[in-house]
Image (cartoon, helix red, strand yellow):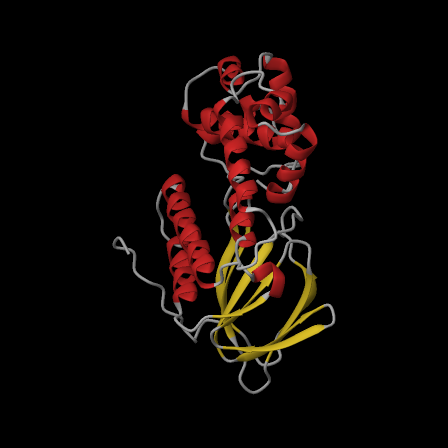
Length: 307
C-alpha cells in the first residue's frame, strides 16, 4: 500500500492502541484504533465508551481475529470468534469478556463524525450490532491503520493517511453489509446532499434556513426533519460547524487576519465570530493560531460528537 508495510499481529505483545490528541475534522474523526491479544477471562465493562481525557462519547467497531469471547448488550448475549465483529453505537453500554480456554484477539476503530455516522447508517450494523466477515479485509485495513499511526511523519500527512484508511474501512462495510430495506426515501437522501451543498456554497453570505427552504422547495419544518434524520443536527448547527471547520483550516494554513477569516467564513462581525469560535472551540482564534504555529494539538469543548 504505497510503500506502507502491513502490520503483523505479534502474540508476544498484548495491547497496542493509538489515541490522537484531538482533531477538528467533524466529518471523519478517528478517536482510537489498535489491537489486543487478551488474557483468559479478560473483561471490559459494563462501560459506555468515552475518551479518557475529555469524556466525549464515541462509536466503536471491534473485529475478532482469533479466539473466542462473549459480548453483552443489555439483555442480549452473543458468543463471537474469528471473523466476527460487533458495533457499539455512541452512548450504548456494553460488556465483553474473553474465553477462558481460547481467549480472543481483536482489532478496533473508535470514531465520530458526520460522514462516518452517515456511512454506518447505510449498513445493517445499527440494526443488528453483530456481523461476520470471512475475507479478512476489514481487519487488514484496521491493522494497516494502526501501523500508519506509528509513523514519525508530519501530523498533516499522518492525518491524511489515517483518514484515507478510515474511508476505505467504511467503504468495505457498506460493500459487505449494505442496508437492503432503507426506511428513508432515496430521494430524501439526495435532497439532503443538495441542501448540504447549498449551505457550503453559500457559507460566506448571510444565507438563512429560509433561503435554503426556498431554494430546495421544502417547508422549513421538513428541512429540519431531514437534517435531524440524516445528520442528527439542525441545519443551522451544521452551517455553524462547517464555518468553524473552515475557520480552523484558515487559521492553521493562511496568513489572513482574524477579521479577514471571519468574513471568509460568513461572519460580518469579527467580535461576534470570536465569541462563537471561543464558545465552540474553547479558545479564541488568535490563541488557536498561535498553538498551530507552535505545532501544539488542540482540545475542543462543547463542540459535540461531530468534531
